[in-house]
Image 1 (cartoon, rainbow, N blue to C red):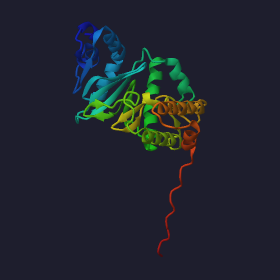
Image 2: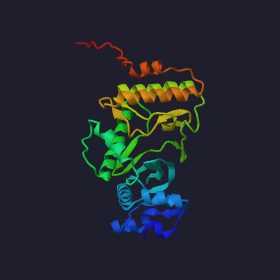
Image 3: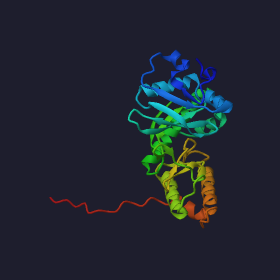
Image 4: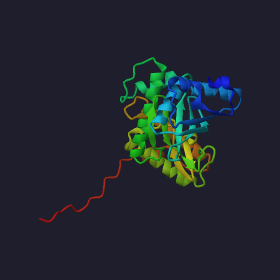
Length: 283
């Protein structure tokens, strides 16, 4: 039975719906919960939880990545982030891209300029899958470069599972919602992360602002790196300048005296060489 036909809002055992039953009658350990409130939420729910998405959630559950899917942490134009729980009772963030409403032209434009991908398709679902894979790879590269981002767990079809940023199941707010108590220190950390992203991961975020930085107990965590692009991308430098302008604007609103030139120099500074050590060996 379709979730829209049951009327079982606000709480629904989503993966026990007929959509998944038609895929496979054995649901294994998966028990997902959709919290849908009102007509608008039910409409969004039907956009997010289409049959193929439910099938992918089932596969992720059967592979041990997910046991419970709870309410939405955030809702964006192209994706919803839900709070998930693993078999080990650990929280994870489950980002589900809405295939029907994703910005197809934007995704295509950004991906086609990325030499890591050779996507030449007009198939909306295949493009969204490439976009999710791009976000997974960007998170991994950023993490390896020492940038504080959510650790990616798995990407499959239109779903990305990653580290949940928060405490005791309560998601961390964005810096737009809760500005840092120590703006100067936060700025220093964020600029250092931008530097590591640029020189270590060889990436530019492309949409960096307080909207895409979480405030986790005073520590900034950069999120939403799906559009982040390699330095070889023809738009990379233009978007780096936009990131710099956004960061300067946001911190000036908090009373921090900062200039675009200073941030630009810190981002592009050469990495310091490792200290020389005495390597003489005894014969």
